[in-house]
Amino acid sequence: MLEDGRLIWRLKRGDKEALRELYEKYKDDLVTIAASLLDERSAAEDILHDVFVTFAAGIKGFQLRRSLRNYLATCVVNRVRDRFRRQKFEVIEISRVGPVSSDTERPEQLIMSDEESQLLTDLLAKIPLEQREVIILHLKAGMKFREIAAVQGVAISTVQGRYRYGLDKLRSLVSGGLIK
Image (cartoon, rainbow, N blue to C red):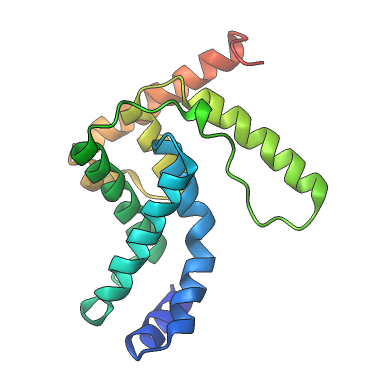
């Protein structure tokens, strides 16, 4: 959080390199979240860019109160929801998105990461969107249940239930041999 605070301070003083550093630091996590909720990689990247443009435009009045990562993840989820509302997207089929790659340097790590990402993508595609969103925000974005409850506009107990039911469904898919 201290590093983020320093980067925000630099950004507020017009240092465009600070925005690039923030973008590089969070882009993989944020595009993974967006791609997990949308049906196309390019739309996820568009969401990410929109979030950073909006963030940079409003930086003068921005106050970092908690985790910048969680703030940006919330912005991504809200932007995805806005997109669903505006364009009336259907519930996504994550299996069409494919795994989201990262900037891993070692080839064997990249291969394992791609296989694991594809497996997770396939499994997540089989559970309801609300449960998927809670799992992604909790595990990928590192958000607490109370933060997710605020994002989703529901009670913490609802978020906990969605998380528990989502994980139960994922476990049953794995143990039931429904993955290849």
